Image (tube, rainbow, N blue to C red; front, side, top):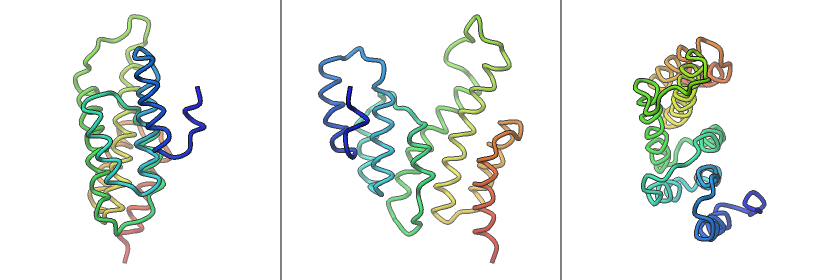
Amino acid sequence: MNFIKKLGQGEKKIFLDEFEAKYPDYSGFSYMRGVIISEFIKEGSYKQASEYFKLLNGKTWSERPVFSAVNSIKETKNDELGLVLEIINKSVAVSRQEHDEPSASKPPLKISSIWQESRAKQLALALDASAVVTNALGNADAALTYCEEAYQLTNKKINRLMSTMLRCYLKMVP
């Protein structure tokens, strides 16, 4: 499969559509969709990212490539950046629901604390991405609130969250 070798989200989307038609039971579609959203974000095509996200209409998408792409956002004067926040906030809502009331029971061979920790970490990553975008939109106070919650969820273990918090704080300092 040559999905990763395709250039840009346009080629990847065409490939995904064709591949999905041929192999509807393939298990990697979620990751591919996440990569396409992330490429829109990396290109600064926030409106297109939002439109593609809405076209998914409930289909699963991998959040990690999207969270990674969010960390590349440098601009703060783009009116469409709020559309990225809508995507991320959907992830926060789903992750929070899974953290608070899991849709599936704990796998029999998984240690309870590790299972809970993995759900907490997923919510923390979503909150961190939300903080990055919220900060880029100019709301450092709200971004810090997301960072603090994320940091607590990880039992103060994720250093990347500290860098997001520092960026938010530095933006607040006159």
